Amino acid sequence: MTEPRRARATEAFFGRRKGKPLRERQAAHLEHLLPTLRLDLAEPAPADLAMLFPQPVRRIRLEIGFGGGEHLVHRAAEDPATGFIGVEPFVNSMAKLLGQIEARKLANVRLYDDDATQVLDWLPEASVDQIDLLYPDPWPKRKHWKRRFVSKVNLDRFARILKPGGLFCFASDIDTYVNWTLLHCRDHAAFEWTAEKSADWLTPFAGWPSTRYEAKARREGRNSAYLTFRRV
Image (cartoon, rainbow, N blue to C red; front, side, top):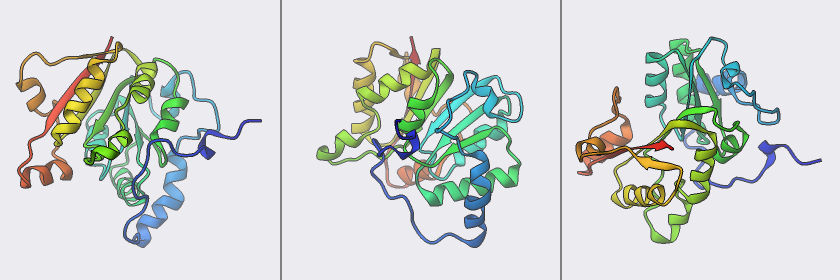
C-alpha cells in the first residue's frame, strides 16, 4: 500500500513554517476552523471540484502561497460564485487568513497548509479555471534559483489541471524572477503570454487589491510586473 499523499516529503517549500507565537484566538482557529476547511488529500479529489464547497460555485481558482491573505479574502468576498483553494504552509499566515474567513463568513474557500505540489498532483485534470502565484519567494541568489516555484515540472502540473483557456497569473517585483517566468512559459507549449503592449504587464490585474508585499516593493523603489498566461 502506498503512503497517503499528505505524508510525502515536501518538494517545493523551503521557507520557514512558523514565525512569532500565535495569539490565543489564532491558535483556536487553527485547531477548530482549519480542519473544517482543509482539503483531505488522503481521499480522491471529486471529479467536480464544486462539490468541495457548501454553496454552488461556477469557477475554481487556486492561489499558491497566499501570504497575508489580503488578495484571497478580497477575491473570495467579491466573487462568491467562484470557489477558491488557498495553499500556504506558513502557520502565521494561515492563522491570519482564518480570522478573516470567520469575520467575513466566507463559504467559498478551502485551504491546504502544506506543499502546493501535493495539491497540484491531487487535483483532477482540467478542473481549475485560474492559478494565482503572487509575489512568490524569489530566491534571489543564483544558487537557489532551482527552488523557484516556476519550473518546467510545475508548469507541467499547471497545464494538467487548468481548463483549456484557463489562466496562470503571476506577479513579482523581482526582475530576474519576472524574466525567469517569461522564459519558462515561452518555452512551455501549453502556455501563451496574453500581453500585447507594455501596459498589459505594468498595470495590476483587474480588481487588484494592493498587498503588503507590493507596498513594501514600492517603498523600496521596485516596480511590479503582472503577467497573465493562457492555457492553450
